[in-house]
Image 1 (cartoon, rainbow, N blue to C red):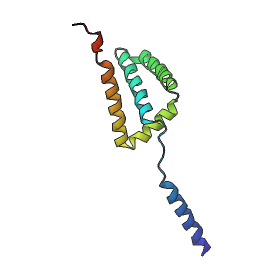
Image 2 (image 1 turned 135 degrees about the vertical axis):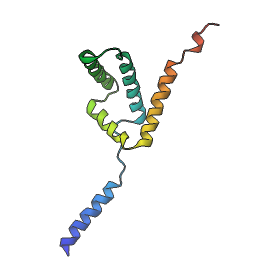
Image 3 (image 1 turned 45 degrees about the horizontal axis):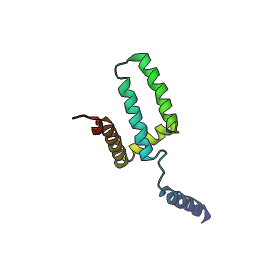
Image 4 (image 1 turned 180 degrees about the horizontal axis):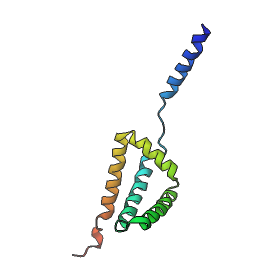
Length: 113
C-alpha cells in the first residue's frame, strides 16, 4: 500500500505546485523601455554593417541592459517568458510603439506659426 501512496502523494504535490503562476523576470513596463532603447540603438546603426556594427551593437546592448539594471541572461529569460504569453507580448509591443510614436512627434510648443 505505501508503495503506491508515496508516488501518489508526490504527484499530488507536484501538480499543486504547478498551478502557481510564474512571475515575469522583467516587468512589462521595463521590458518595453528596454526594447524601445534597443530599437533606437538599432536605428542609429542601420547604415553600418559587418564587424563594426556587431561590435557596437553588442557593447551598447550591454550598456542599455545595465542602465535598466538587468543583464543578458535575464533579458533572454524575459523574452522566453513573454513569447509564451502572446497577450502580454502584444501589450509590450503596443507600449513600445506608443513610446516611439510619442517621442517622434514634434513638440507643438516649438513650432512657430
